[in-house]
Image (cartoon, rainbow, N blue to C red; front, side, top):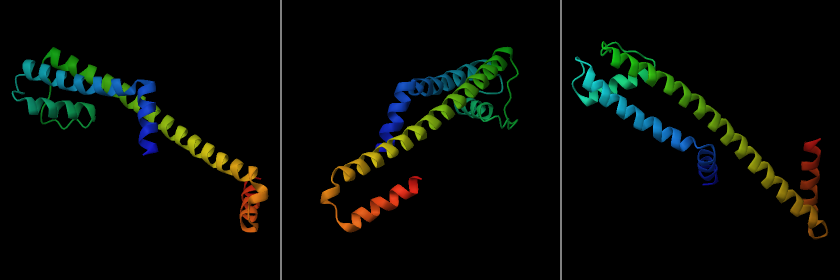
Length: 137
């Protein structure tokens, strides 16, 4: 649950959530435009399929843009996709960096708690702390 909260906070702080939502809306808008201007694409589902082929750079070739507006929409969709992928990569890296930092802080807090209670600890707990200290060296 903490991982989802950290990811959510990273998405909100970086405003990547708005970028992703905007990207999805843009895909649907471009699909509508493609359906309107392309003579060979007469169904919205085919227009979405075309957008998928453009975004994934797979270029299946079963549907192609032939009009100037269709080609420009394809170019804009490709450029936007590249930016979204770059941003998403940065968010994921930031997410894992914060997750590791959170785990490190929790471990350190637990270790400091044990150090504060040294007189109360059993022999086994003291040996465990000693092993952990040796690992950090």
